[in-house]
Image 1: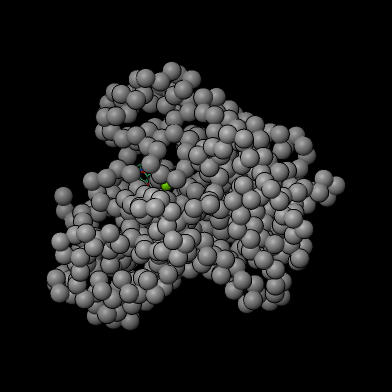
Image 2: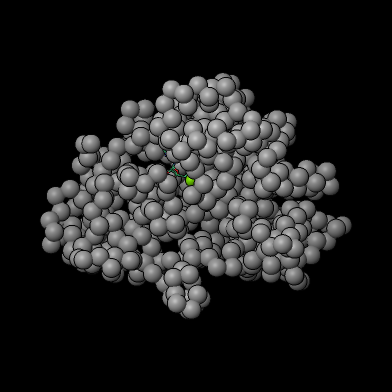
Length: 490
Ligand code: ADP
Ligand code: MG
């Protein structure tokens, strides 16, 4: 396959070694780090201050300026689309139950959504921190992989990587003028911080805290800490600072033992501290709820029954499913939410439908290699590709197959990527980057703040690229498949 020319083309071996040394230092200096994996240490528990460099590319990857701008412009529409979907109870009632029938996690979320709805609990204010993921198909152009409305990650690290990439490119001899032209301004965490403050002010309880719901063993903690810092910074630089008293980080376990709901007001407290915003960086996957006593589920139910702003709300979590993504591909579906503006959005969709649909059967007969099968899961590592799809699908009942979607495969152009990974010490030439035939996935961040239907903030908020070997199907930075990357616009 032809590789696209990019900033790594033409760097000599000695340049690569020199720039890699610079980039590694800058990465660590700028906090492009992951906490050490406890499983990789001999004792099974990592020292709390042990970190490693996050996997990054040495230089940015080429990306079409036109397609990039297209994705940036679409973001506000996607933010509105999903906000409206989350508020369309009838639509969720039509799409979710068939997918939930043989998926116990989705079914538990659906039950909780209904319980909370019937209790009359209300969350008038929305804070949505989204990331739409795309690949640039060689033939079909910009195509959406999925949208994330929950725990959208890497905004903090991407912002820091843009700083590092700018310096590395400058050291590689690229002029300031070129850099200003090719490397877009990129501040996802800063924009998310501003959205937090706007939502916090709308909630109107200046004494209340912000709660981050986190995994007890989070490795991507510096991404989250960046956002914390940006929330304080956005407050300090706003016209009327509220002096957000605290940002708390708590696991479901810790929440279960100290959270309280004031039934009369619907207010949420942790011990005596009121909580204005519950920001979930955890709780998107069944294994986050695996404690046999159901403590995590009870903690979640308590928070959901409160009027605190949940980012995301249960309705947003349901809107975030692959089942909804497929349902929005039905003719006329997007137009109901975005009258007159649906064509641009739909242009980024590839063929997809639930696996129980008769189209899925036809597609698989025609060419299984051209499809990806996805369950209703988030967080990577769950999909089935190519020939395995047929085998897997043939073992499912019709009812079970309603829990999966079949999606046409996007085929991005390969380019050479120079990757820096912490475990390269093990390679024969540790001073050199790994040279890999790679493909990239573009994530565009978006923020929305609303009071009921009324949008108070709706913007795009920067980007991240995740670049992986062209020969692995699955992505994921934390899982070790992908590097964090940024765009070089061409
Ligand atoms: P998750 O919610 O687990 O992140 P995704 O839909 O993002 O699920 O799929 C995970 C990864 O699988 C993506 O990052 C991408 O690398 C690959 N992938 C998903 N859908 C497609 C597709 N239609 N074509 C090509 N690759 C895909
Ligand atoms: Mg994904």
